[in-house]
Length: 423
Length: 184
Figure (cartoon, rainbow over the protein chains, first blue to last red):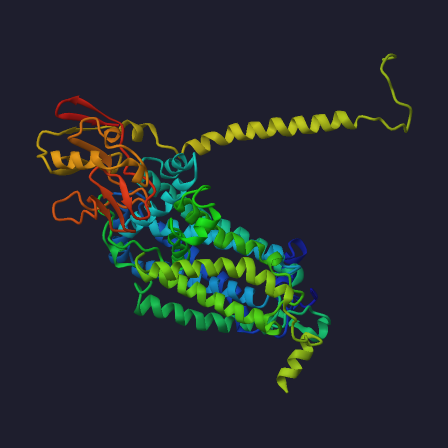
C-alpha cells in the first residue's frame, strides 16, 4: 500500500499497526476476486451482516431479559410492551434467526452446485459445516429462552434425543438438564451458552475467511484463476459495492418480516407460558430444523432402511437409528470433497450432476414440508422415501455420477468465459 | 567433578530414548492433571444438592376412588397414579408378555395390583400421554395415548403400539402405610 499519500495520522498508525494495508489486502483493492462472480456469491457477506445484527440485537435483549423460569416469559413480554423499542429489537432478533438460516442454506447449496468444497477448499468447506452446527445449537438454545410452550417442549424433545445413546444416555440427559427435567438450571445454562456461542461462531468465521483468502473465491465456472490481471478484479470497489447492493435488497426482505409479518416464522404456542404438565398436541421445531426432524421421525421399526442398518433391529432400536441418521445428515456433508470425485467443480459443466443436485434440493424441501406435518398416514411414507433419497444422493449418486460423468468442455479461462458471455 | 563423564567436544550424545521418555511422561501427567481439573467444570452441570433434596414426593392415596387416576409432580415430572379396577388388573395380568414390544409382566410393574404408579412421560421423545383425566383419549388398549407421535399404552402402562421403545417407567416408591406412598 502506498503510504506516501496517507493522512499523517493514518501513516502514524500504519507504521505501528498496519491495519490499513491489512484491510486493503483482505477486503480492499489488493484482494483479487474472480470477476465473474454472480449474485449467489453475495450470501457470505450477507451472513456476516446477519451475524453482526444478531449479536447487536442480542446484547440489547440480554440487558432486559431474566433467565429464570418464573420471570423469563414475563421479561420477554416486558421487552415487547415497556422497553423502549424493545418490540423492534426482539422482532429483529427473532426474524434474524430465520434470515440467518435462509442465507446459510442458500450459501451451502451454492457451494454444492458450483463445487466450492473441492480441492483446495476442503478445510474452508468443513469449517463452514462446523459454523452451521454452531448456529443450530445457538438457535435451539435461543428458542428456549422465552420459556413458552414450544420453548419448553422443544427443549424436552431435543434433549431427550441424547437418551437414545446406549448406557450413558440418561446420565448425559441429566447432565444437560442439571436436574430431572427441563427446569430452571437448564434455562440458566442455555442462556449462558446462547450468549457464548455467537462469539465461537465469530472465531470460526475468522478461520473460514482466513481459509477462503488462501486460495480465493471459487467462481461459477469452477476453474482456477490463471492470469491474475485478466481473470480477477480488486475486491474493492467492484465487489464491495455489489455486496452493499445485495445487503440493501436483503435488508428490505428482512425488514418486511420485522415490520409487517413479525410472527410469520414463529409458532403461536410459544406465546403460552411453559407448562411442564401439558404437552401441546402438535410439537414442531422452527422451520429451519424441519428437514432434520423429518429424518429423525422417519426411523420407525418397519422402515426398510432402519431394518438394513440395524441388521433387523439387532444393532440398535429405531429411536437411536433416527438420532444417528439426523446427525449423519449434516456430518456427511463434511465428506463432500471426497464423496465427489469429479475433476471439474461447477455443475455448469456437469449436466447429470446438475440434475441430481436439483432433485436433491427438492428432496430437502419435501423433507422440510414433511417435518412440519403430523407423523401419520401418507406423510410417514413420503418422509421415509425422502429420507432414503437424501442419503442415497450423498452416498451413492454423488460418488458414482462424479466419477462416471464426462463433463462438457471447460472455457479456456475465467476471462474467456466472461468475453464469450458478453458476445 | 573428575568422575563426571564429559563427552568429547562435538560428540553426539545418544539420549533420544531418555528425551522421549521425559516428553511422553510429562505429556501424560499433564493430560491426567487437565482431566482432573476439568471434572469440577463438568460436574457443576449435574443436579445440585438442593435439586437432589427435592427429589422425593409423598402422596396420600385415600381420596383416589377405584377407576380414578391422578397426576402428581415428582422431580418436575408428572407421575400417574391409577387406582385400578378388578377388571383392569385381570386384563393386564392376562396379556401374554411374549407379545409385547417391551416384555414385562404386570406383576413386575406394581407393588400392590390395585395401585399403578409410573412416570407419565412417553418413552419416545418425552411428551405427556393423554388418558389420565376422564374424557381423554385412552388409545386402543384402554390405558394412555401419546398424541405427539401416536404411542398407545395399556392399563399397565406398557407400550403396545407406536414408536415408543419402552413401557412407561415405574419410579422407585414405597408404601409408608396402606394409603400413603413416598416416591423417590
